[in-house]
Image (tube, rainbow, N blue to C red; front, side, top):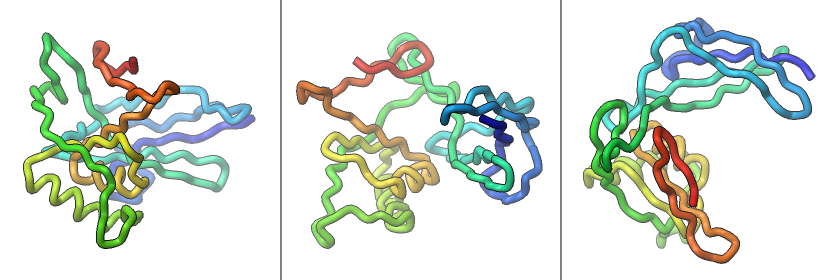
Amino acid sequence: SGTVEALILLDSGSSLADPFGSRCVLQYSDGRLDGYVYPKAALPLWDEYSPRLLRLALRVGTEEQTLPFGMRSFRAIGGKLINNNREVFLRGTHDGLLFPQTGFAPTDTESWLQVMDTIKAYGLHHLRYHTACPPEAAFLAADMKGICIFIVTPDATGSSVKVRFIGGGYGLT
């Protein structure tokens, strides 16, 4: 049991200044963190045109961990997909993690940034995976480039789980 200091930061700096008025203290016990981080100022939104990343900084005593994330408003309205109040037409492809020159997917962010640049050069903004999940470096590179990654997982019967939109979020069927 104890407390965790939480703070939302701009990704571009290492300063622990609180640009959004988000500093708060959360309680944790039994490995569970309870509470919410409510910024007082509007956070910059993430999309394919402006992939603005933020960092959530968590501090316990002298240890600190930061996690990158992007904020967006994504919802379905009348059969249309809306991201940050802009209509979106999904333009993407399936990626089976085929890398014939090496026989395996890269695990470094720099290599994945090159992959994401190629995806963007073709006018695409999302990748779908159903045969495997890419490494963490792929997710970071995608966040940096404004690309969404969709992972489709099989259920216990071997059929794919379908993603459906529910109000302002996602649901699984």
